[in-house]
Image 1 (spheres, rainbow, N blue to C red):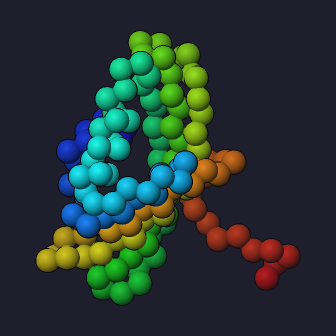
Image 2 (cartoon, rainbow, N blue to C red; image 1 turned 135 degrees about the vertical axis):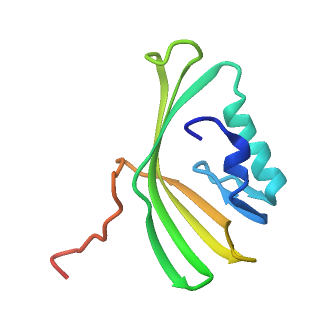
Length: 128
């Protein structure tokens, strides 16, 4: 997404992938996910600056994992990256599965958060 290389982004998805974006829209199947990402990268009026935090990987077993990472996407008027029109910050949650020796994203949920985190660390309440 940083390089707007949609082919590389899409190579990571399974054919039966699902995606819930930060506005809550549900996309089903690799083709619909491709259309969503192509819309982001192909916007004729706005460009974006994208940054991702360090991923936190939780292995469930040898073929399943959950990946979390913070992200921020700042939209600007094309041609002027200093003219930020919208700031979005959130947390990505990906379910990954190893199929035929390769990891693929199966399901992605994206939500807004108030802050960007370089790393995802567990939070404790009252020291517990």
